[in-house]
Length: 340
Image (cartoon, rainbow, N blue to C red):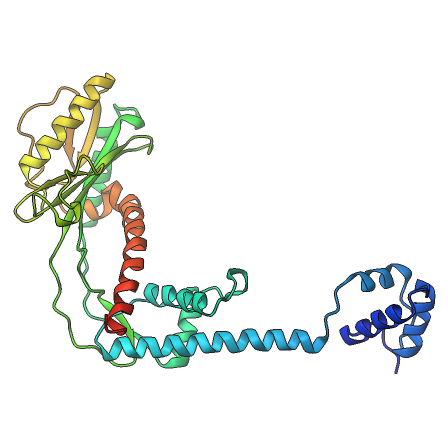
């Protein structure tokens, strides 16, 4: 039965024919191929030319490469499964992001080129967990709510407040807690892990920016220690960090007013008058009037919905911290597993 196309193996045979008879014309090679491989029509001269220019790739070679790749990734998944089980046995909580990081690390060990690697996506992770019988165990959760009328009224009040200012002169400040020693609240395992004591070590980070995103004030870090060990005896200013301390590593009125004084001085130098929106909490009480900063608080119980920094900026800031934390955590997890 005649066919229209040559297989990869037949193309390689054609190349071998041409190498053994280099003086053959493309027309002669086409006639030979049509007869030898039972083709409906001889390949055109341009088709013959393209075939001869390509590298010799046997179908078996292609299959071998695919099989080798599959075997390597199967090996990595098996190693990854063993790693997760070892973490579970040692009661080390691990997250989906840590598993993805470790998968990349195993690829590095096996010297798999980046362009040949699987994409360790959420879809891949879901299949990996299902195949090996892992599930994500949640340990705790939280929720918050607010009255819809309060949110709607608060949104209208904010629009009225900001109406008299240019967008670049409307600023928002918010604090976020960073529990840097807190174990993940979920862990991917086969069996539930016993509860871990939650570390309360924290720092508070105050972020301030304007509505257009053109003015981002240097973050303020608040810790418990006046001189943190990680500073290694250096002053925070030398390290390029704006840092202060309080008894519980929280924002308080003294720190808040000092922060506002510095902000006001900066606006005086720029000859600008700005509106600063903050949460309605006890620490956000103004001690003295400011010449160039008008302070306004968001309505009570609405900050989860109306706080601009809560929407995107704090999440983006924490995502950058999380990436660094994951790299550090992976080194620590593997250190525990190796007994270091």
